[in-house]
Amino acid sequence: MIATSCARNAAVTRFKTAFRKNHQSIIPEETIMDDLELPRRGLVKAAGLALLAGAVGDAAALQSAAAAGDNASDIWSSEYWAKKGDVPLWMFRKRLGAPKAGEPSRPVVFFVHGSSVTSRAFDLTVPGKGEYSVLNEFARHGFDCWTMDHENYGKSGRTSGNSDIANGVEDLKAAVEVVARETGRTKFHFVGESSGALRAGAYAMVAPEHIDRLVFAAFTYKGEDSPTLKKRAEQLDYYRSHNLRKRDRDMIRSIATRDKPGTSDPAVMEALADVELQFGEQIPTGTYLDMTANLPVVHPEEVLAPVLLVRGEYDGIATVPDLEEFFNKLPNGDRQFIILPGTAHSVVLAINRQLFWHVTRAFLTMPTPIAT
Image (cartoon, rainbow, N blue to C red; front, side):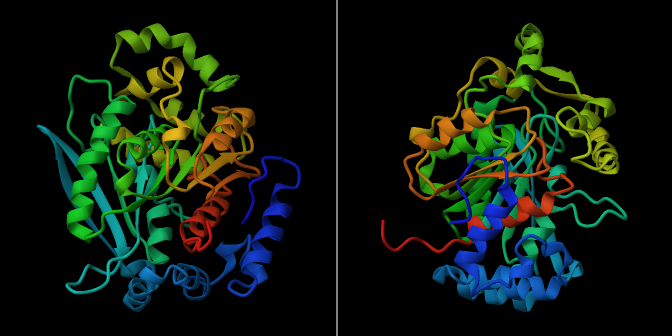
């Protein structure tokens, strides 16, 4: 379903053909690659809710979400705090309408941020540039959206640690307790980007009972032949001896230019820098150390849930063969590998971000297979 081919040429054509074949009775052809042009009300009713209702257990919850409203003003948000020992961890939630006693719970999507940004990357406002908040986008489709700042990031507590992948797993353990308490659910979708995908994957290995479906965007397995990681490894001694590194405005700008200029809007990176730099110019080194010296940190044989791998066409962090090896070792037959054209490392904030929304939403709303 959709596409599992890794070939770059004709990626969009194959994606549209496969999706049309499997969903022609649900979604009109014109919505397949151009969701943004549809009115929000029609998009939510025709695409998001129809697909989500395919999962029988969530149908009532999605009807409730539709009744809550379709406009951006209908999106409710709240802050929460998790505790990991003595470390406070800031959490954020968005959904259509405030929770009400007795209503069906909604499918939960937990977004996991990467090395050089906080969770604000998932809820960015860029005036005059359209929707850039993936939390808003998925909330409009009936999901209960959560995210968090990991230790030493954003509003979360500061320690003397380097916030490596293993530390991030402990953060997620603490966060899941809060999500379970607030939603009544025990299984959740996780969407991670870059080292956030590594955090989500490492968490899935130790807590499979809490995993529904996984989306790994800008993921890397062994990092072999990665131009970005080769360059980053030049600073390996620094990452070993320091727990913080510089993350200034120029560094944030480079996220959009290091692989393929033109795949992200420079104005978006300026908006991202504005919200990120309120927390200072220092960011932990732990995930950089893991990605240059300790890969693999996610072992595919131990990831039991359905997985969607999403790679930008020009991503310099992981090669296609690296991801193919990971993909082929996944034990669950419910898995997909999609390459997004005209996109580099950052898929969440890319100009073509609608492609990422589309494939992720389709994967998360797949009906449970009957025959296995």
